[in-house]
Length: 464
Image (tube, rainbow, N blue to C red; front, side):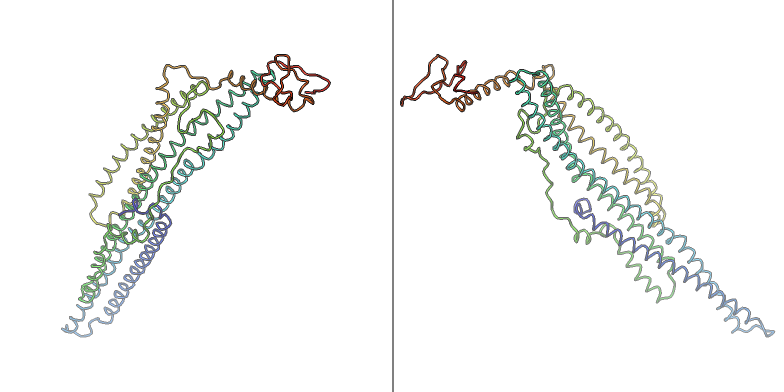
């Protein structure tokens, strides 16, 4: 049972918990400050009483009364009690209250850091798995339209025999843009899948576990503060001793390891299935020769793939270098933190290490972020590596078969001519087929030959 495992979707509850604990610490702080003032006032009152008694108890007789000696001794002990109370008040101010002030500031920083990192990694998750993919899909659909439009214009140019090379060039460029964007989408999709896995399996649990670690460290520190408070304010009377024994028993019952079990059980996150991030197959409905999750290697994309592979390799190397550096720094900081913790004399001294502990936890977040980045870049580089290596030494295949497109255009034109003749000739008999003669069906009507390598028409009766 822990924050990272059970509270992945309980962010608001965790913020409310931290707010409640801060209010509690402020209440404890106010209470201690009033207790210190009260003890100082009490000590001052006792001292004033003793001073007044000293003046009024000046010897009036020429002998020493035993009653007077007992009384003076009682006054002296009361004065000693006053000094003890004042000393305790000062010790309470310099010890538990000072550490409590430090803890409140550190707890505010822990909450701020947790909320900031949570917003950051959540925004990054949304950007990688939603925003960036939607932008790519929007561009994908737009380029698909441009490719289809360029293809139609190329066919039209072939039909008319005008500027076919210019239309072909536009067709090439549009196709190249689409294929390059397709590759970007495949890589982004892979990165988004891994980023989401890293977020739910590592990044978010690590952040939540780090928060739980700091929460428990503060509970441990607060327990030490309470323990010192009990020791400083403890008096010697049986009644007060009994009261403080009860207080000490309550303090000893504090267990940082089980402090949040009830909270976790109450706010336990429901099991939520991770959203599938898949290739949007609707993007391929109006385009040919593109495969889902497949890197396209052809004459239009070969150079860009090599460039993308080089960039991915460089970014991966830089990330791995940074990761190694941060991991070494983390190991060093953890060793220093352990040495400082071992040197603590009092349990409440843990409070003085909280700011360093928080910095250590934030460094862990940085290391995890670099690991997530390394995983994504490695997977993307592997996709590019695989495609480049399996085609190494080969000539990139062409993308567009211009001869086939031209034949399809010629076939379409022939069909249109036949249809036009049938629709516009007023007398079918006036058409002469390829053999120079018309054909008749079984009913004696003239019919038209389907093949049309050449034709003749009577201009007076047929307008095309």
